[in-house]
Amino acid sequence: MIFADTFQFALRNLREAMLRTVLTTLGVSIGIASLVGMVSLGVGLEEQAFGRFMKSGLFDSITVMPSMPGFGRNMRPAARKALKEKADEARGEANAAKPEKPRAKLDDAALQKIATIPQVKDVYPNLRIPVEIRYEQFSEFSGAAGVPISARGEGVFQKVSYGSFFPNDSDDVCMLSLDFAHRIHEGNAGDLIGKELTLAYASSSVSAQAVPIGPFGGMNIQRTEKKFRIVGILEREPGLNFGMGMFSAVMIPLRKAQEIGAYDISNPQAFLSQLSDKRIYSSITVKARRPQDTDEVEKKIKDMGFTAFSINDALQGAKKAFIILDLLLSLVGSIALSVASLGIVNTMVMSILERTREIGIMKAIGGSDGDIRRIFLVEASTIGLLGGLLGMLLGWAVGRAINFGANIYIERQGGTPDNLFSIPWWLAAGALAFSIVVSLLAGSYPASRAARLDPIRALRHD
Image 1: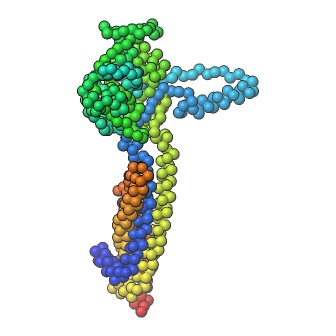
Image 2: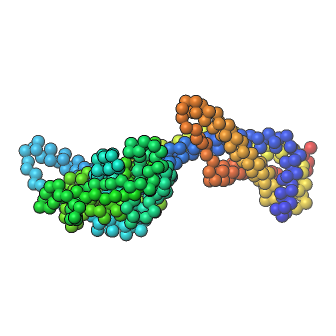
Image 3: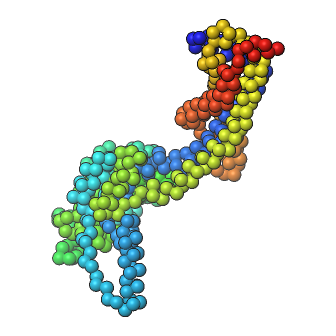
């Protein structure tokens, strides 16, 4: 018997027992709807928790600093060493100190070495330079942050309230925070676009305008002034966002921050190192090509002797918690589907009792056990397919209704409405496949029972 004939027999049998078929299909659809609804709630909550992080670029960002005792992978050895020293003191034993290995320096050579890692997309130092900002009669000491051109369109730099992002990294341009723009200008902040402000900073470069402000380590640190044209104004958005570390009252291209020879005095050790020919940075940012590569890149950087950490480290526990939540919701949703599978078994068994004589005739005229088995399995899989499609539609509709009501409540409480249920393609495909598999498993026993019927006894059945 070809598959087309088997399929026609199966559909005919389902049509003859229409009410029973509809009720069984509804049972399967309710089971799939509960499964889809439960899992989609877990997926939606996970997207709420991690969606902004993924869009902001935080998951592919790694902060790298020089090796520090008691941090990262050096923490455990340091703790063991401290405990050992205390034990030696208690016993009155002398413990000779072992010479420590020289710490890896976070200089330009280290940046180039990290950039050679295949999974690394970008590497740049985190520069925040103390400056005096002057605009007309306004004057204030603040910090100017160096922003790489690669940050265009990412995180806090996705939307520029007025103007635009840096056109390039070679012009003397800057961006301002919206709060700072309101402080230096009483009118519309957008009026500042195209205007110039003056940045005064400490530099060792000698020029006709440079005014020495004091010696340091045999060098004269001078005050240098430079004008920057305002090209954009940014508004700080609440919550964690990539670029917040670079968000400042004044932001200039990272290349200009490196070229002007200004000193980053946020870290005394970094400040002293900048007076030498070999500049050392207090921290750098490494961008992985994909969020999935972050852990591997972080491990390779640590193997170089640096301290590295990313938001993935802090969210590992949360990820595991959401995985467990999804599993629990899946198990709860599968209970209804398990009950529905009993309905499939009941429907198929009743079909055998009603069609015993018909099965005997089919086997008497040459129908094999495999043909009989396939007919019942096609019936079961058809119920599973229809129930799965209807269940996904029902689960989506119920999720939309609950989401609508929940958003109304959230808005009344002063919150921001969002999507609490999410049905990605893999959930829809998995739910449909699971429905068919469960239906086939439920129909396997009735199919085998029908295939084992003795044709002579079946023909005698009344």
